[in-house]
Image (cartoon, rainbow, N blue to C red; front, side, top):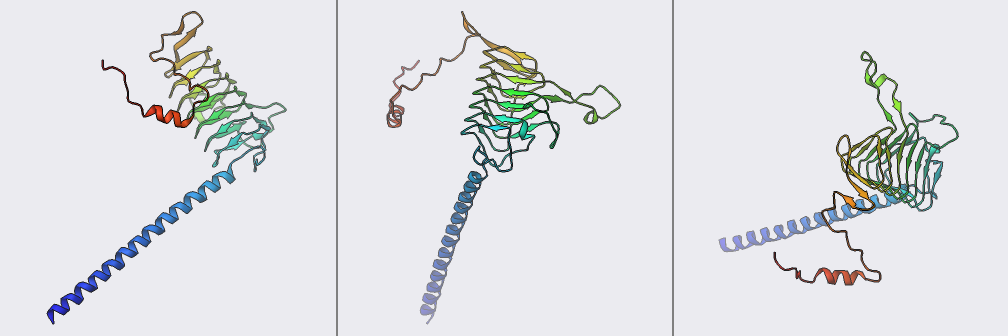
Length: 264
């Protein structure tokens, strides 16, 4: 009898273990299914919440060009009748676009914030246009760039800075610029064409065409000269464009080839 009891006991424990394993597998399947459903639902919400010329939602921009999209969720947006967006722009998630000091102001007949064609504004960027802000065609912003035409004043030492009337100056960013992550563009900045603003730079004043600026405050660290090229010279060779007609399969095959560079 003890043998039989042990056999029954082992058999019972085995069945219980199988049931436990089955329940664990079912719970894991449910968790995966819920995760997939949440991700699919969020993708649907992102698509439905994106703003385009055909689906502006509550945002009544002064103009929004073809194939321009504001990703969902949007950041703070107001004064949109005085905001003009060009075509083929990509406005990332949580990007703030404002015209005027506060909502529901009458800002007159002219646009305040003008964004050109093919502009990319990275996630979490802010463009604050209390007076004129212009961003030229084909400008690319990294995440969390801050552009403002307004700055606090602190003339009166006896009044809290936040309660003093701010100073406003127009901002212009020329076409073809790259603005790095966390850069700040201050009131009065006038940036030329094809300028690189390094990550974290704080830009004020005028920046010439074809320059690289870095630092806080930003200063020119490299510039293009028609006769000498980039000064100081670039440390790395220019990237080689992919020839026309090369397929993705051919590129993958090239990437798998052994490196035949002789050892130094």
